[in-house]
Length: 142
Ligand SMILES: [Zn+2]
Ligand SMILES: [Zn+2]
Image (cartoon, rainbow, N blue to C red; front, side):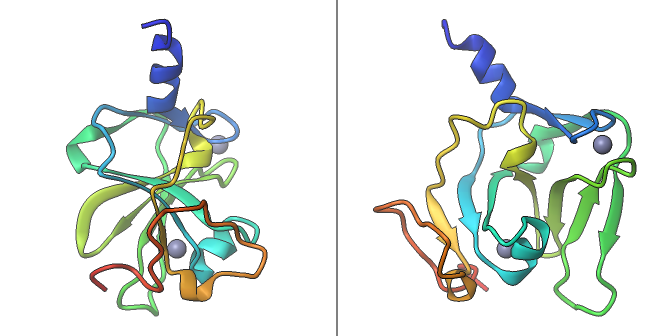
């Protein structure tokens, strides 16, 4: 119970400038890291750390994100980002209603631990995978 503040901080987040904010009200379905080239574009070359959250467990609480979906890719995800500072907040896949929340935008991401590594075939030599977690070359099920 002493941890209540941290618990709440892990469930709320927002962009770098503070204009767009959200709250998570359900436990994540998956905690992971993705090594794909698209994630590298968004994360300065690093893997992206994410929580997969059920759609009814996520709500915007302030501001309105802008969205972008690549028109040239059939499988393109939709990226939601702050129109002011450009911070990427979540993505949605076409084939899955769950919300992919980026761990770096949580108010307190300090306790995050990835439980699975995805798209590892595209990983850079400098990427780190924690010992003992399952590693998939692609997206499982894809
Ligand atoms: Zn912003
Ligand atoms: Zn990825």
